[in-house]
Image 1: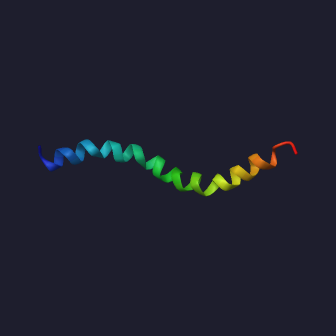
Image 2: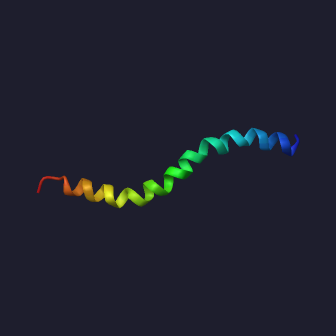
Image 3: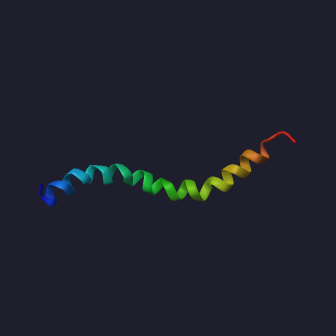
Amino acid sequence: MQPENDLEAFQPDLVALLPALAAGPLLVGNWPLLLLIGWASLPV
């Protein structure tokens, strides 16, 4: 197999991962806020 073919075969996977890579830090950064909102909404 040629490296060019491997790169072309791998490229769609990278394109598919871009949205997840972009959303990952946002989700990681927002999880404490979501946890706080969920905890605050619990009946005391």
